[in-house]
Amino acid sequence: MSAQTVAKATRQPKPAAKAANRRLKASLLAMTIPFFALVILFNYVPLLGWAIVFFDYFPGKSLLAHDPVGWKHFIRMATDETFLRALRNTLVLSFLGLVIAPAPMILALLLNEVKSLPFRKFVQTLSSFPNFISWIIVYYVFFSFFSVDDGLLNSMLLKLGWIGHPTDILANSSAAWVFQTLVGLWKGVGWGAIIYLAALSGIDQELYEAARVDGAGRLREAWHISLPGMMPTFVVLFVLGIGNLLSGAGFEQIFTFMNPMVKDHLEIIDTYVYFNGLQSLNFSYATAIGVARSIVSIALLVLANYVSRLATGRSIL
Image 1: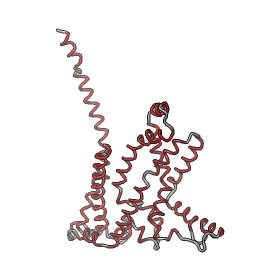
Image 2: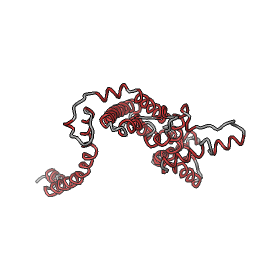
Image 3: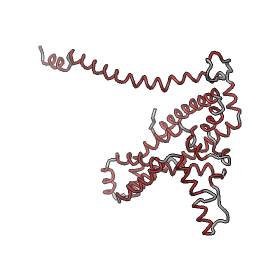
């Protein structure tokens, strides 16, 4: 037997090793079956319920016992002024949310430049704490500050003589969009900064040392090293934010802060579905809105991913 034949035989796996490898792969695949089953059960089987959008469905009767109504609920959705107003509010709040999307990245950049570790931990903890507060408590905090009767801010400004009468920002419809955007920013900016701090910790420290050797200051280090290091994370979160464009500021926040004075500017698709679909027992209409929103959200996500790939070379799909 030649030396080449011996070398070739030793490179080939033995039949027993091949069989063991196949058994290992089969066992690993078998371990994933329960997770695939759960995904199919809770994420795809409920999609069969979308069929009720073509009926005036009411619980308690078989779907086949209902007469089909065609595209009736989609037509109602496209012509209902209240829904169109909710769609406008959702898009405005989502757009304002995208405008302030760089805020967590800026906070992380500033925290990264703080050399005092105790002060940095204090600011990071203080800014992240609101994320763990429920929206009910958040509303109570803002109500305590901005209430007309006993609000801390109004009381202080009145005593200082800066205003002649109290201002009710919670019932000011012209400021509702900006105010809710700032509330969301206050609650989530610290938590979002943690993600970018994690991205900063992954940057090679030799890059900073090389920059210092070349005479770069703190500002140039942040601009040429820290900021580019966080951009992949920002792009991923921004593309995901585009996919959630039809979610607005979120149901819990809007439902908590909405009152009759600001309803025209704060009602979003989620609250509209709750009040006009579920609370009024219009399940088919509520489902039609959900179907349309899911399809549009997927289209927006794919489009944003495509644009991101063309512009930055990065994508998530």
